[in-house]
Length: 229
Image (cartoon, rainbow, N blue to C red; front, side):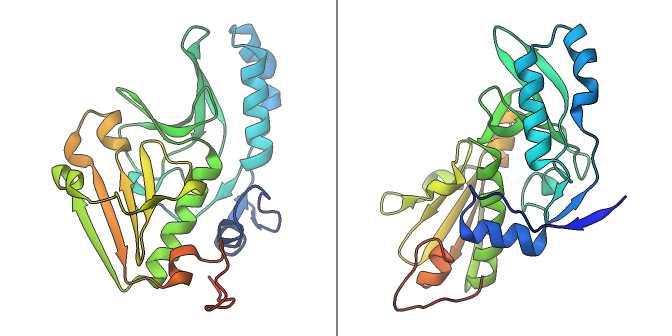
């Protein structure tokens, strides 16, 4: 399998995420999905679904990033495959193979969401970019936090988020990030929704962050200056 360094990180990402992809990502060889177009059309899969898969593969195919802290690391690398669904409910396709044996598949949803599918569909982020932003923010927060606290199950409900703001770039759905005055909070509910297991809810609190730690170059802070992420 050929490996290639990334020098064309998607422009839609924040500077923090583009740096993360460029420094920590590699691209492996994958097959173009166009070769399967006629086979899928013969199976009455709509042409626009195949178009979405083709666009996904061209844009993200082969991108291998460091593992996520949840979902046993996430997909090993992005690779479109196996469309499923109906015209009534919409169409999904696989986002990439699992790194480990998890009881769900990583999928791209009817509206382009990135999520997991098993007993139920659990869209984690509104776009693939949101998933990548979350990986980048995890890496950044882990580097700069003075303390990381893990909360699980019903204790997640006790988190005080009223004074915090959502981190918009992760485009959170089942999984969200929140920014406070000196901390970042990541809340993961995807597994709880996907396999109906509320105890799987998890929150990670990254505390003791300065302005650079809170933003990592997404919003410049005049007093902090330019610090490397």
